[in-house]
Length: 447
Figure (tube, rainbow, N blue to C red):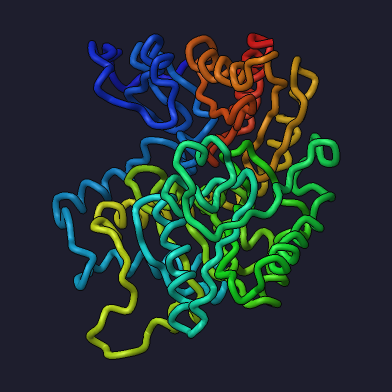
């Protein structure tokens, strides 16, 4: 499909050396750069003028598609009116308006929002709130944090400690002490080629009881899980798992945190995945889709009872010694409000729900392609596992990512040898077909 480029081709910079790129094979990239210079709706534009179909919403961010004028205009207006406001001891109106709008979208009882600037900061904030909450209420022995194998919770020391992806952890020492992990909910033998939530696996939540038995409930502050583990390759929660986890946490006085940095704002067809699963956690972390990726922003939704526990002591004293210089930045708040307006006006969450069955059927049609060993779908997301090349894990996935961009005009994400597809929620049925045609060619090319 030929999309008109909004600007002329842009030459690749002569010197790529100074920029040490994050989560990137730097040497390979700089030999053959995948450079983008513009974006609109469902496409990026490469520096050579090609239109690149975005099968990844950037990085799970641009749920409403690229180049939304309403968002950029709101950012521009804010920059000209209020470029910065200190968040410590001062405020600005849009921060309070955005917090109220987000709380209105959240499950009942999660009425308070603490703003930060990324998913990583949101996770570390939630973990700190959990520890401080138990301390304030007289249970300071509750310091243990429980994550899950294959979980991804950002790159702060708290996040990688509770996270369970080995390459994110192994270079950084012992990390936080007093952390334990639930087992992953993925078992290919029992749930391969599942559309939506697998039937098998709810019992894995019972592993929390085993952890309680080892350490004692009085030492455990919180459990943090993703309702859908995206960065590890779209691992979908089994039916009944989150409900069981909620019941066990309630039984033992443990806080339950949902990391919805990826699943928030429509990815699974609802404002938050908590609504899809009918489970109300004690905190929800969010980021990415809150501003459609236009300005960095993250935050934590907090239950009333947790927030109110801190509201004691003299009125002039700081209740929680935590925050960031750019918490509730005016430009981010402007972008967030404009983004929520678009979600509401275009009913994108309901649109995602309606599109989910068509999306799942289209992705599953790839199961006959060479080296495809599993496919998982939920919401407008999919993980396609490719068999690794002999003695070269991750190489087939990297070749797929590189070939998709250079040879098939498409952006995908990969996790090892898993292709992750997560297009903007504005994706049309014809574009879903185009995505699958391109992905099929990519898979054949790396066979």
